[in-house]
Image (cartoon, rainbow, N blue to C red):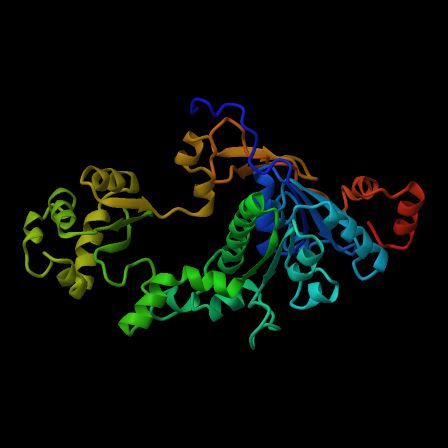
Length: 402
């Protein structure tokens, strides 16, 4: 622990966030805020809540997406089409520091919940609009599921094999937008601390993922051609790929310069002459003879099991890694050694979850609160905004809250 940092509170303690959110992009952004100490009130539909609750039942009966993105929040179920439900939301927003929404394009504006409208009424509020393509332009009204945005942003065009483009195996567009929304909120809160004013924040999935496409985008714009799809290989470096081992594993290695190649040839391949052979001595030569380069490396590693291959490569100073599946990730020795796992409460009991990757000095752990049931905090939140028993009963009777 750093001296003088003991006992510091989490950085967002005292900050209240209200979120009308669904799926991944907004929920993942607000979960980061909750982990750092913010109070996050999640506003859900009365008829089933956030539709991500129904994506699957893989997490002990709960949806894996929902468990991942929604710990540490309070759930209130409101019918925002009913003026009384919208009035409750407005009371919640009046006491909030941050408001986040990712409703379908135009829906928030029709309800008066867009960032510009709310910030005009509440100058200290930081209000975030997350959308697929932004508020203007020809794509503003398009549906923006993660896979569709991955395609529009060009990610799919550079991912996969020469024969087959593939989408990323995680919701990359959603996550990109979530992380820019998270950092945008933090920046706006810093500005509010110096000016007293919050202000609107806009994040689009397309623009967030387009930023992440920086290398292939600049390669294509300025170099004339887009990087080729090469699977696990690298378009302009060799050897750089995953190679099978004798025990059925796969080990990925990357040779970044010709010095490393000479070490690989001598200490792992057992062919020191390859270090000076004109066909392999330079990266350009190895790329030109990629098939033969890969054959030499593959033959050597194919005679070892994965443990031996990693040990030999590491001893030679060659960057390497195992190709792990998600079950192996859950048992990763580095995560275990660094004590990165915790248990999070859920409506079906405790589930394992990773600590967030932001580690803060001072000993205060992230606030990894429970995953809420739909409407679990409705009554408490209604009372907190001053509603009486009779008013709450009437809202329940009419289906305005759940």
